[in-house]
Image (tube, rainbow, N blue to C red; front, side, top):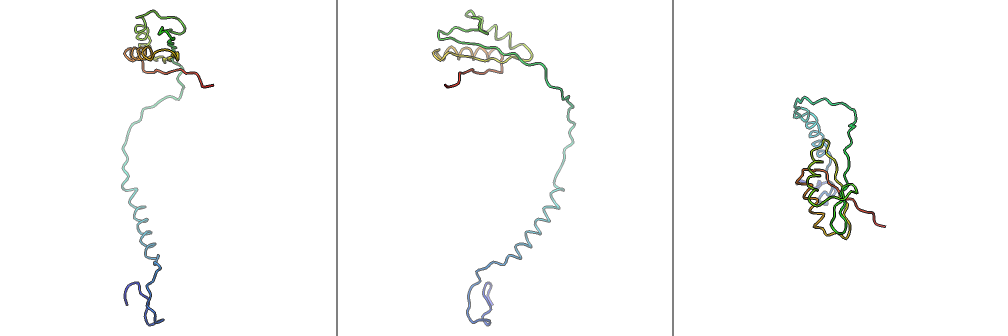
Length: 140
C-alpha cells in the first residue's frame, strides 16, 4: 500500500486521502513546548549589578525661562527689554553658566528675516545653552 492511499480492498476505488492526520503534528508540538519550557530558565543569565540609591523627593529647583523676542526689524528683546547690538552673546553665556540651566524661548515675528533668528540660535548654541524652544501663536 502506498503512502496516502486508502486500502484498495475495502471499497475498490483508489483515491488519495486529502485530510492531514493532525495527531503526530500535535505530539511533536507538545514535545517542543516541553523542551522550551525546560531549557529557557537554564539559558537565562543574570548579571549582578549594584544599583544606585535615590530619594523619591521631587526636584524643587525649577529652571527659569528666558524669552528672546525678535521683531520685524531684527532687534532683540530679552524678557521684553531691548538688547543692544553685540550684548546678546554675553547675556547668553551668563545664563549658560547657571545651574540648572534656563530654557530659552525664541519668539520671532512672522515678518522677520530668518537670518536674525538663525543668528540668535547660533549664539545660544555657542554659549552652551541646551534647551532652546520656539514660541508660536495658534492658528485661529
